[in-house]
Length: 116
Length: 110
Image (cartoon, rainbow over all chains, first blue to last red):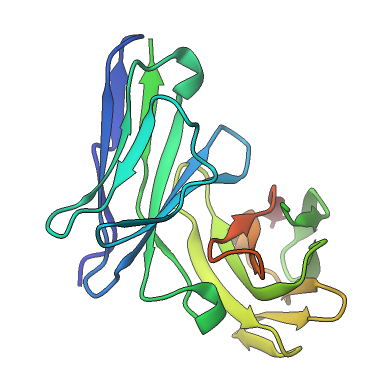
């Protein structure tokens, strides 16, 4: 059973370009979470999705950032018109259910975005 | 809303014990604990649900005091492999997402 698959592992974009990060959750997991991590810092919540629904996007910047988890295919985190401050590691996690039901998260290996 | 972890960092000799604390200003449904090694993904250790339970496996265990909105992670007879950054994540009554603390850096030396 493959774990959470994220690609690409490393992504370099020039300022103003679009970055598209993909996440395939573990088989049987319908809950997907995106977190952002700067070097030597903690994990900052961005968005929580279930199939075809955004449940909580309170951690995502209102502009340039969007996320989706379609019925078929991976979850996508899209960053438009990237700026240097977007450089970070972006981790995706999946679970069978929420924490209050006793489910922990399985994290992917992350996508390290560098904006030049 | 972000839980507060303490200490920020700790250095141990192999075989010593450590306690990492996590506290929240909001009522909690659950507390997660993860360990992250440099350049790698966080790895799930355990989850505790409200009710004051204690969980653990091998030499790593945790407790959850619902009334105090606190959790503690106990590392017993530490091994070199325990080195890394430990994060607690909390899910409070205000939503379904898990918010992580800033992390506790643990270094175990021989």
